[in-house]
Image (cartoon, rainbow, N blue to C red; front, side):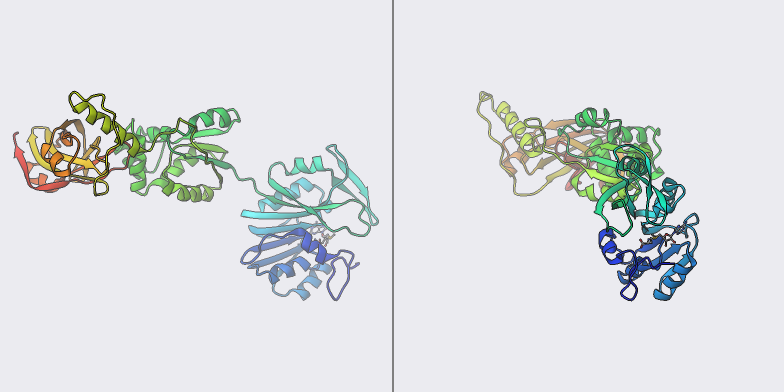
Length: 468
Ligand SMILES: C[S@@+](CC[C@H](N)C(=O)[O-])C[C@H]1O[C@@H](n2cnc3c(N)ncnc32)[C@H](O)[C@@H]1O
């Protein structure tokens, strides 16, 4: 049998060193490597040299396998046909100058891709026949004649996979057609992440681009609604959190609760179930802090993640919350100043603390209801707009919220108006007695769509009155 591969001590027909350079093998350190049609093991030797953790060579020729075993004792060599591949998976599989020996070339490629690990790469080196049409060409070589694909044929065979044309390989004596190197991977579905803040046009982009392209759109708000109603199956823990914190008009609050309960992974699983292994676009705002975790989880779910970022449409973006609240409050102050309703407003000064300050001063219990009085102010001199009450850790329904004047608070903090007091009417669970309230009640509040702050302090001299 003539010498094929070239070693320093044995020159063969193939310029193995130049072929090695052309193959552009992916990093091999700590990874597994399989060379199919390995001949005397030149590339297996390189894989050992490059630190591969497992190296297997396979060839149908006993003579070549015998020589390979002698040269590279740390690799494992199997003398068998590629119809019978060793136990997979492998991170890198090589098939060089051998595809034309296969009876069914597409079937062999499919088996080799099937032997790849999730992120594995098949390095394919092959001759490509000239021609623009989709056909197999019989090529007369010095030693025999074999069938080679044209580019259109090769593209058709590779169409189920991701592939990249790496470049030309070495020319070999007696080889009438040029060879190329192509890296092939298993196709991963794509998850397009549209997680920008509200007002950026995520849904319009989905309607304009993804839906016409036949790419499924998974809307996070819709998922949350379906989880709450029990129509989408999330984990029991996710279902419980979404159902008990479901705010149809403020689903960002529901999402915040899911994140707070460290159940975001469970929510991502719901998206993946909806996507059903196909390409999809996620339409849903996600706080920046969780983007990386979501990307990692989608990737672990077998997806290639394409995160889309763009500027808000000019003039249509949602203004920063504090600007909006500052101007709105300044307007209210101008209305409160009798006779000066049209006075030009200016944004309000910030207070010397961060977040929300305030107290619970008085709680009156009647049958089935609690009335809670107190005050609260955000550092931007804005009165909180959303109030949440928990009793013994359980959220209690706030039936109404009224703003009431608190001149004492206005003077103390030098606020521009007194409307920082609140009166809340809250549903009272039957099992909460007035004596439990000082430790059981917690009042939280937030400004606009900001995350919830609190709880507010219970005043040292707070009154808890039983009027039931
Ligand atoms: C032209 S050589 C290429 C060797 C090596 N891949 C390289 O590029 O240096 C083709 C190799 O494929 C092997 N081969 C041919 N048919 C095979 C089959 N059905 N199963 C396994 N190996 C096969 C041959 O024994 C030979 O070593």
